[in-house]
Image (tube, rainbow, N blue to C red):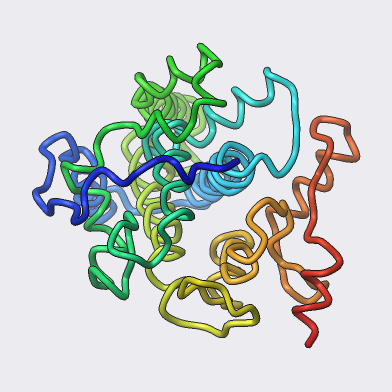
Length: 294
């Protein structure tokens, strides 16, 4: 989709933090509760499940589907992807897609939302998320998504997804504590490990694509930005670390262009394709693959 007519909000993003981001800081601080709750096999297992499902909501849903339309799906599964992404507490699908599309248009320039080479590593990693200038949804970048009323509703009420998950985890932990005490878990423990801790991990692996993915690694393609490929980043982000590949051909669902480039999100999308949950899965062009082999 061509967004060349859209303009950045300002030549330089104001750095003032928004008070509405206090819950973001609160999630980080709440991780300290683990000193009192401890961990258990149950809390770790459920924590991994909530992390992986929400990670796919971000990588497969927010990024590859909503931002780049790299595959197609039903309206019902579209909303399920949006809810899973919103449960990661990274705001709504329209907010996320709007900022990301703007990033691709102005990547690594002064007008970019999070260019580490221009505004610093800290800004690219976390500062831009806290900034008052980036609170609003860039609706001008997502007219194709705005037509779905349920997505607009979720974008306005994005907090409902993480709050309902947090309440559900606390309730599940309290029920297990009362009925299965041998599992050595509790409501507060599940809330801490499976929500606060896993959400914080999701924050920083996601943000690392913006910071690390534009500063460290190798460049297969001579793109007009500073994007890099990195195996470690790809492993912890379910395939998003092949960032130079992605910037060379953004509409490809597969970001690990070659068989040795591990891309867990692509594997899940492939299975969903076999099950006919998604279809029209896009890949890189033959020309781009040939260029990468040179």
